[in-house]
Length: 235
Length: 71
Image (cartoon, rainbow over all chains, first blue to last red; front, side):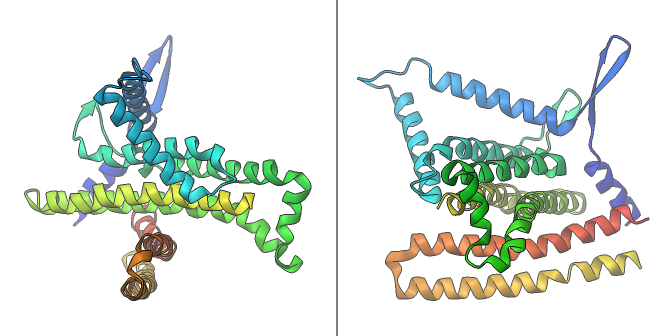
């Protein structure tokens, strides 16, 4: 049992990539490196897919790209409503990033001596994402209603619940951050335990649920909640 | 004692389980009555499940933190 906990703790500790610059050691944590890899893959895909777009006689590649873009934007615009349409590209980007980062555990590779683990199991990453979300939500409210209308919206529907509405500014990002982090960390811990106890066959089936289904659902829920809050703020 | 504390923290799962169970039951009911509204119902169900599940996740987090950080 002690051995199991020790192995698990080893998997959970954040690894660092050290780059020597002059006399100093630059320590870059694993989630940043994995995020860079995801960024490189996404950027490469985006450049490859948008190379040589045409208006007439579109190629098969372009048809697929147009399908992906229109479907994903329609998905988010459906959630965010009429007034918040300009925020859809940001939310689609977050959806793609979260989807990829939650699925990256499927690739059991080592790059620069670091194994690929989902960056969302690092609390700092989800906290940063939730922070960006709440800034966007409040910005959307101010942009739509003006500072006055935004301040007034705290006193709706009754003035007496204004403190509770004010507290929501802090509760919303906390809950967004903890939900994503807890789900991914929980799935990661369960998968690691399972791999230690039964290393063959069984993890493959559980991985379908914990890695693929849960990861994609959580990415969707993060974007869904953010867009719902934005919709609430702009209406 | 620490293991006991972690075990008690995971009791939050009861609430989430009951909540998601009720929500899914009602959603199945609603789809049976109005099959054409399935898209909207499943969206609301997903949202409700996400919010109900959060309590279980907090319990799990506290359980994990108890085991690893209280030594």
